[in-house]
Image (cartoon, rainbow, N blue to C red; front, top):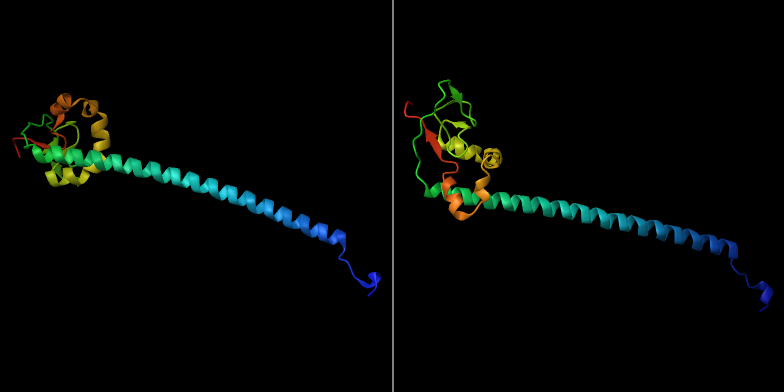
Length: 150
């Protein structure tokens, strides 16, 4: 066998192919880094959302426990104008006993609306997050206060 008859690959072609493979690897590595970053962002958002849902559920459970422990108290509604229920828009004969601003026609409607109302209601009563003895002043969260003239 002669050395001249052995065919060697074109060195320029081999180098070009290696360069192409290297560029492909760099591109894939960059895409992988971006995917990892995207997963981190999505994961952080989901964790934040779950923490908010957990806090909201704990607050709702705490409030529900206070409501179950309290009796409904009667309170005259001072407004002479006809108010509409915040949940069903029927004539309201009572209001939230914590904020005394949101009208309801029944405890059913009040409980149904509580998830939406609690954000506004609790924002207006900051002592709900205070010490236990201060919280006892506001244990009537979500109790309906009825007027005497129904």
